[in-house]
Image (cartoon, rainbow, N blue to C red; front, side, top):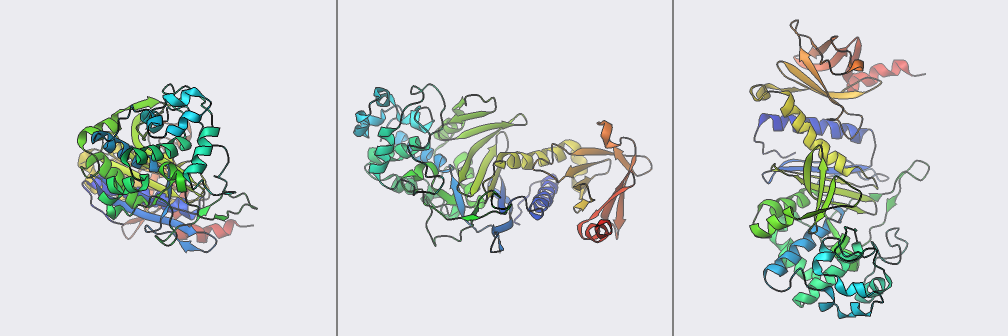
Length: 459
């Protein structure tokens, strides 16, 4: 794990995050995952856990590539804004200016759709077209003619520029329009305007066999409680919507350069991209802008994008008002990536909120300790300690604070009926390091010690 840390509490927070993710991986909740954290652009955390291919027992590494799916929409936004900056097009241009064949649609409202409508999911068009390719029963459309058939056979759910309605087919059409406006292909534009400017990110516009070492995507455990691996499928003509591939180190670097660097877009365009947002229907926490997602968690806004592909889910976000970027890839069809991203940030926030700055240079992080009911990691300070339960994907939310007593023990802060407030908490040490915690006579121990003792309880 690489570290470029700016404060002691950063280091402590990253240790807690690592223990938490290690525990989740050990419990086999998902086959495997990657996680990266950047601060001021520097990679301060980069680890992989579990299996890149569970049936084969192949360990996940930080170099394994995965399908980043709808992260592609961030790239499309960069291309569209750059073409607008250079006068190649205007975001208010009608799409039929670049794809005259759309005039053939029976619904005359299709003629009102603008470049910006497609870019912001405000075109009103259906989500994925006429046939299901997400189940891998058929390939993704691979030709312009196939995409035309999908578009001309689709219908508008809303009038253009009236509501957010997520549409992958809309972004596939947008890729064609941008290429037509510039007299080239979308692929060539995306490489020139984005990928070639951050080659160290090692991002790919679409899946290419042999181009990277690929993690396998896994199903849900539908098959006698087992998961199966899925074949890789290129997004083809849908690559502007869902083709992007890479790892958490690379996509977090891209988001850093997009938010804080000058390589991809000038400052004025970056501000426009990060500032323009409309609320999603039926949600008080989600917004969408120029190819970008905004989500509120814990009262704070996270900017970036999520992705979902066959066997993969991903999330890369910058926490607004900070210089932190968090990225996660899970190689299974699950849906809790934003909770994990938010929990990473909340762990660091909880530590800062618990310990005064003068105490943060001498904090101690315990190993994972467990009993038959739970597992935790503790951060111990001179006057306080905080416990992070590791049983779910939101440890900061269920964390609890301990207060130092005059007899050198700690006790639960009086913040809950069931947390045994007032009773002593003893940190058991051996050779100066914590090896267990005694709370109300219930002892949690280090993993190996706990497993040995647990055998006595077996039937």
